[in-house]
Length: 241
Image (cartoon, rainbow, N blue to C red; front, top):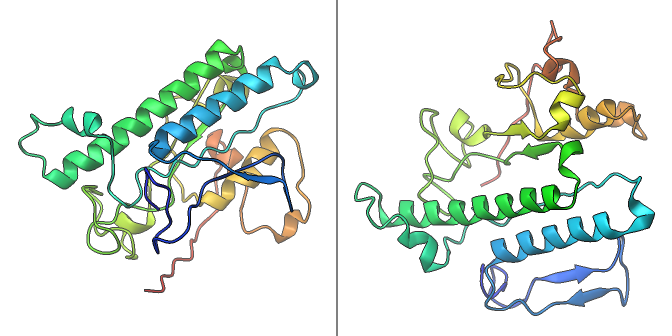
């Protein structure tokens, strides 16, 4: 999907809407005109608005805020405002694709900074846990090849090598101390993205519906450094090309 026009991959449909509530239904979804606005900026702006609205709503003062922010960046297509790419103009060892990718990532980093600042300005930061993650390694040989690098891992997106099946992630925020999760520690076990749901549920003392049917496994003991046996010892990987 184009970052500026928001036209989807086949070039026919404008794909950006705003739902007034969960499970919006008929006559609830609104088409919003963001043509010309870079999607990373749009998503960060809307995220900060949700944070501000939550903090200013007296009826929600005792309610937690769950914010799922899935930036389009740094996914294909390789598009970024020129000002971000220009910051790397003196990096002579960077290819044009690498400079473009660095600019996209810089814009995303700026957006994340704006969101964390909104949490601080709204008085929510002290109780915040941030999870930063990705779905796969960068595409270096197939799909939409970018200026990404998975070094020192072999391969990239679309392969079963570690460069394609693993992604970097981290936990941050003051709530880490609240849950007694050690800081500055590298997680030593396998962790699949579907594990986050049962892990977060256990952290807040909630048992999800149909818990025994979930694909995910709680990794809380591992995060606390108390797991003698890893919660997950296998990950299924498959691609249809």
